[in-house]
Length: 213
Figure 1 (cartoon, rainbow, N blue to C red):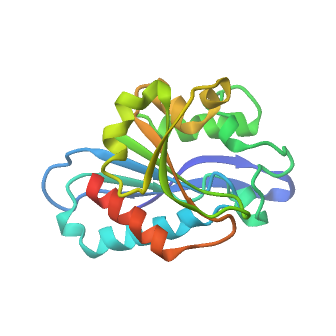
Figure 2: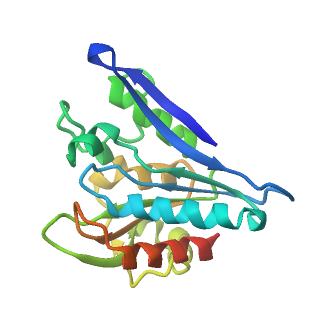
């Protein structure tokens, strides 16, 4: 089921909407919830393939699903439409704006609603790509502040590298760290190139997410 989790009016009668695909079991008990988010940066397309393949795999075997899967394919629709890493007009990195605010500008309110809709997940996987100059192998990135919490999750995700980053003030404003600080386990997956899709990497990550589930 497609749900709108954040929406605001723009100029010239346009509307900015952020949606998720909310997939629940068709039978049996609901044992938990995983959230998969991507499209934070409009020049990162690897996550689009991951979302497509993950939803396809789940729906083909929906009778085996035992928990809720929330897929957020495009967190930054304006950036995705323009192929821009930042939020157009504001010229700001969306992944430096969390946890947002209920009373700030329109993007502060949008990111607040995004984070609020993810909170309560058993785990959140934030999928990114590299820039267009460096191709990176599939990897999990974790702030050292949450190393003990998130490393067991990362080991289930079929990545080639688990990278523990030294904590810095800038980490606090990312989605993953904001969620961890609020009690929702979250980590970053990164792979491939900007403005490209590598199906091999994407399928590797999908296998990892299914294994974690």
